Length: 205
Image (cartoon, rainbow, N blue to C red):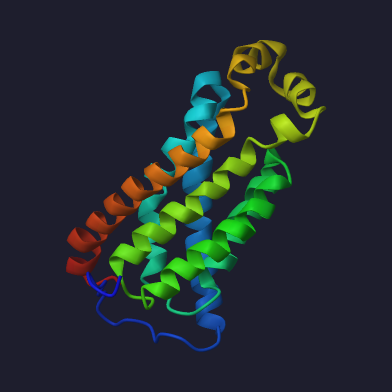
């Protein structure tokens, strides 16, 4: 993954311990990422769209994440970023499985980014695809928490529950995981393209 290097003007130093500026960058870009997820997630109140969030979120959120990758030059930054995203999902009512999954996918994405030397655009795209799989955690409560479906009906309506019930089959989680990964690849490529064409020319990053 050493080839296809990502250059962004005044690049942050690679390696070393996390500093205050690194934590600020994590917070800023995680916030942008969560805002983008929230905008997409609003459409999840449409039953069929709820299962398409594993496609829509990675596609739309690829741009803010690839912006973040131009600053993620130290170990641990992606992991913290993804844990924050998972905690955000939990706080907004998606269940506590999502932050647990975000830890695992965050560590995996860290390893991919490390293999790319913290500067390979190919590794950045792959890391984003791996990280995006954490969205699967949003669907786990339907299978692991017997009361989750009924509580969803109380919050949104029984009609919503009846509309999504046929999709709650054993194949759903693997299918969503694959969708997250593939859509993450596409979203990462889109983000990388936008970054090269616009952010580099503007000298922002």
